[in-house]
Length: 561
Image (cartoon, rainbow, N blue to C red):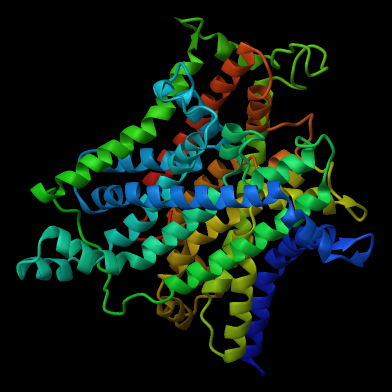
């Protein structure tokens, strides 16, 4: 290989160098650390320790609980999300954008906020208190569905939005009923999007750390929460790193298999299906059931949020702002914490400032990495070697999709605490972990946009004498800036509420708001519980505002979020 091909390959490798180095240090190294803890005992290979952990009755119960709750939650989320996806992406209804943004908010809410909102909903004094669901698996299912139904709406809705109407109209003209058209024409065309949404929802349910931890405690644990409980000694009173590492390996293997199966199922779309963006249609009489179902979904999403807001403003049966005023304090020490002057090391407002500052750092990190990754995996290849290198990088950069935030945080905990990588006290460790969590979302927003740019435009710019930088500024940037801002908003919102990885590595003197909320909700005292609700409302309002701005920047028919 000589001349231009070699120069192009060198450019590809140079673009991929930075994200590859970051991935090697902050992803592959932690994963390798988990392998060592789970399979190597005292320096020798010992798979028996892993088998011993899997043979324990509690481990089997945890795995089974994770499987059945994730399955049920996925089915319910898909059933609830499909009508809303149709109404919000195919019909011209009033306030369509606002409703679509409102339904997306739960997905970016911090999982601890989702947990506390559902807990308030099913508590004895909540709207569903008469059902006595508090402390039951049903409450966890409600939380998981509430958190994930937006994924179905957005993923399937984006595909539905650009689906060619003509095949369905032809079937209707030939006498097929609306239900027959739906089952024989529309749903088969949407199958890849539905499978993709179901796979992602199942993945998020299986890794729904904060929701399960807040609603299940130590009684109902998923694999994610069990890893956390083992590393904190919450089950037996002693830290069990090897058992936690073994469960992390099981989870990693299961998630990778799930992603591979989902990718295989998505890779066989109907070749007769055509995409054509069309204006939304006016609702017809046969659309009434879907519109009603969408209204019920909106009600189901709004009820926990409204309950949380009302709960933060009530104390002893009266309306009050005492919980919001308590945000300036550091929690009520009722003797269990051993801290002098308060439950926490810092005021709650300072934890909010920490979260905002860390989210800004995580956002620019994830954007920088995501842009490089997106440019590498969408770059046109002109040789078999270039294609092989690009495919290898594509697979490497998607690996973080297969690792949960808790596993990532646990890997940081056990591998980045020795020289020359003793980063436990570094202020950049938490932003880096949150940037890796947000990276897949950034890539998913940017890659479809870059793939949609006709390479002939860049070639024409080059033929007219434009250099690579000028071609980038005149061809790519005008198309990319809106999705880039949207990706920044998603990364900021996700980082603001990140709890799984942060809970392992955050420094006690620089806590984030989700960590403080979990600490307050787990401590005795009515004021602590009310302060946790007020802090949750503030965090939810901040993320909701960001998502409303992101919705204004959305490019129709592009991206999965």
